[in-house]
Amino acid sequence: MRKKSDKGQSASPVAMASDQYLKIVVDSTPNMMGYWGADLRCRYANNAFSEWYGIPPNDVIGMRFQDLVSEQLYALNEPHIRSVLAGQPQRFERTLKKADGSLGHIIGHYIPDFDGAGEVKGFSIQASEVTVLKEVEAKLKLAACVFESMPDGVLITDVHGTILSVNPGFIEITGYTAEEAVGQTPHILQSKRHDQAFYAAMWEAIKADGRWHGEVWNRRKDGELYLQRMTISMVPDTTGEPIRYVSVFSDITALWRKDEHIKHLAFHDALTDLPNRTLLIDRIDQKLLHAERDKNHFALMFLDLDGFKLVNDQLGHNAGDDLLKDVAKKLLALVRRSDTVARVGGDEFIFILNSPQQESEISDVASRIVSSISAPIEVQGKTFQIGVSIGVAIFPADGHTAIDLIRNADTAMYAAKSMGRNNIRFFSMG
Image (cartoon, rainbow, N blue to C red; front, side, top):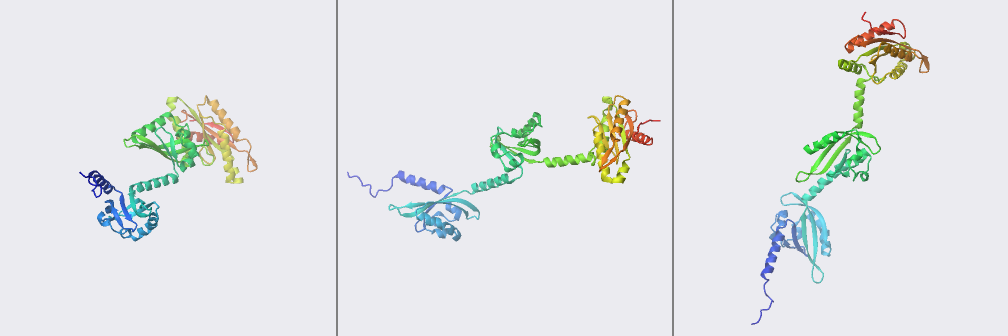
């Protein structure tokens, strides 16, 4: 028998099946895929075109490219069309309006199709929607912008504590460059002002709650200590296990110093920087509170300057202020760590002598105060010699409250002043 010639035979079932499968794959892909001839008429369009343009794929076939898209979009694509028809593959990005009115972002490819003579007979189109990726990219760009521009310091570590990234705020606050910090651990910032229990409690909170917020003393590259308000957050993976730690902190040293200064002013005399009456009474109350337990006693000496008014009258209040500051320095030079000297009025001071051995020790300290203050002093180029009158009240013999002790020492001081300059008197119930 003669074999039938292959010429004119239909495609084999296998080839037909392959073509069918290929069409199924192409039609089901979410990316737009099509083919345009050199005359810019569509030869093929998959189902994805319907989602974008709201036109059945079969209706797209035969349409001119410029009839499918808007005039504005065609004008944008025309240079790429000319180039692909000249044999040059094209890649570009576009934002397109879908049939439902929403916007989608695509990456488009025009791929030239050459005939046997090397002429371009058409081109295929592949357009991949990357809207979600673009949204993620936009969020990442925004996050990166915030990361780079925020004044707070940010450092990111892996689960082992190795620094992976820092922002300019970190560099500004700590003094370490990114190159110096990355690869190190946050231990380079430790001030040694917190014990291990502090850091253990911090990491227990992070483990339990995923974050910790508080204040930490750290050290800059130049060695200067600074106080930072910091939040450490754990970044989990899909299973909830930590993969990163992010620390965001701000330098609050100046704010802390301001607060401390305000607190200091509330309890100290603005002129001499000695404790004021409020702090003095608090310290006396603390001594009284522990008096029975500690079996302690102390002497309260009330000091009033003699001749201070003369300096004020002759040279003015500025000179008087200078004199008071000089007296404060002299008194501070006489106090022990356990003693207290305070300014409680214009030219009135109180000296607390803690646990004197006997009355003679009180007299000796009072005499040294008189000797120091009555020494000649130069104020604004003029020499003055002032004095001091001292009244003494002793706890517990002369009072059991701060008010009683101050009042009784004040009474004794007036008795000393009535005797003339530079006298000392102990309070007497009689």
